[in-house]
Image (cartoon, rainbow, N blue to C red; front, side, top):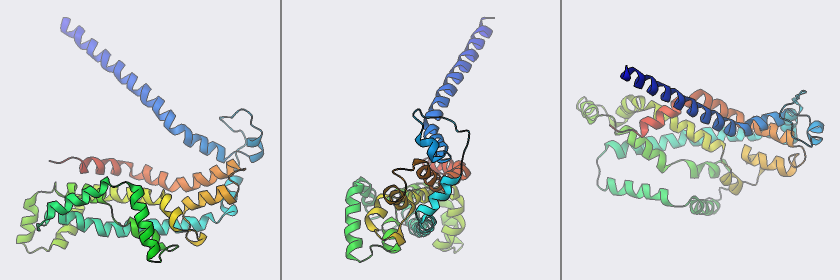
Length: 287
């Protein structure tokens, strides 16, 4: 009898704890998602109605799509979209070509000074990003690559962190597989492509998605290295809208442009969110 009472009390405490956790998570979700809701709401408000709101309204009875049309006509937003897509695809593709063999070399190949070289690689993560940007800017300028896609892409084609993440994932694959493949006469490249990459596919996909998000949101470097509108990315486009378009006055149209720019990343995250979580967790678990 006493044991049943204790079990009921434990189950009750568990339920109460679960309710408290869900309430806190719901409150946190509202705090995080409210700015996105406000951005979307503002983007469908009529400019005249928005301007006459002395008290912010959390709903609108007459949504309009005119702000979205104006977002594409005030500045060449479609051109900025194409530039960003090209920059993102090329940068991500080249980076994967660079980091996958590098991670394979550090995880499987044996060569003199490997641990020292990898330690030096990791030490690069300690350098403040501001110093790297200054060095990259001076180098790209001296090479005459300002206002070119090469200048935009070149500093972003590798990442010490992604090499480290992929290396840790590769090292989880048993050495016996590699030794057996070498006995069968399999080349390192074939083993990498046919065995290691398929096994570590979640991490590879995660790195690609994170790099796409990083490139799409890139702001500081494009602002430094390009002043020709022919090479502007969407990050430059936001600034162009704010300075020379309608951003300082027509806030609803500005929010419509931000919604359009944010939509691709939102879709990517919603589609691949499980892959991202799976890749990060598998990359950080060794055994």
